[in-house]
Image (cartoon, rainbow, N blue to C red):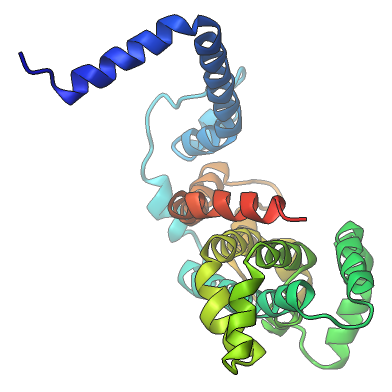
Amino acid sequence: MMVSDQEVYRGIFDLNWRRRPKQSSRILFIYLILIVSAGVFLLPLLWMATTSLKTQAEIYVFPPTFFPETFRWQNFPEGWTYESMQWTRWLVNTLTITASVMVGTLISATLCGYGFARISFPGRDVWFIMVLASIMLPGTVTLIPLFVGFHRVGWLDTFLPLTVPAFFGGGAFNIFLMRQFFKGIPIELEEAALIDGANRLRILWQIFIPLSRPVLATTSVFTFQAVWNDYFGPLIFLTSQENYTLALGITFFKGLYNTQVPYMMAMSFLMVIPVVIVFFFAQKLMIRGVILSGIQA
């Protein structure tokens, strides 16, 4: 009598499950905690989604209701065409800024991370410690000097203050991720390339970059999420409505005497969708990048 592979695997699983009841209970408990935690983190997103389908009157009902009485799908097209909104232009502005910052961050953070990981120069460790120390510096501390500097060079109300700094370092955290990941690549690959006559840039481009997909994906997702949702930077450096980003455009629903909460939530929900999609497709590479970067000394 022939036994299928599925029956064999099922029998092994049942046997192990019976032999290790304590470990099985522990696994079930861990999964239960994870499910509850995921529900807690998803609750604000679900609240935003349900609020975007309510009427303006239902927003102020007390006690508040989680699900709307009638799902008002018209909030999405009406919010998109509300008064003088320029969502198409703001979307293009946001994509332009996000793409520029991602390119600048990947280029500069990769170069800096490779330099700290593989090139020996005087004071390398001291400079790296200073880079890490800059993470503790709040952004508001440097806001006034940056604003004055950008004003003197005539960059205010342009995309330059939001994009150019990304080409000069890419952020201390991203440099740290790159450096830690590069230190985990076997040095024998680099030594063999040096013996064959390859220079540093060629080694970086042909050896390190192809092996660094996880950390590059991690840096890209973190940068995309931060720039896409950035509100403070555009608020400070952009003044013309034509140059606004999506994060600033959403504030137009808030008036002096009235706030269109359903429209605001509808546009906010649409704005969250690209971030969720990017994270969904890059999550495996992100996890690998963070783990491999964190285990290196």
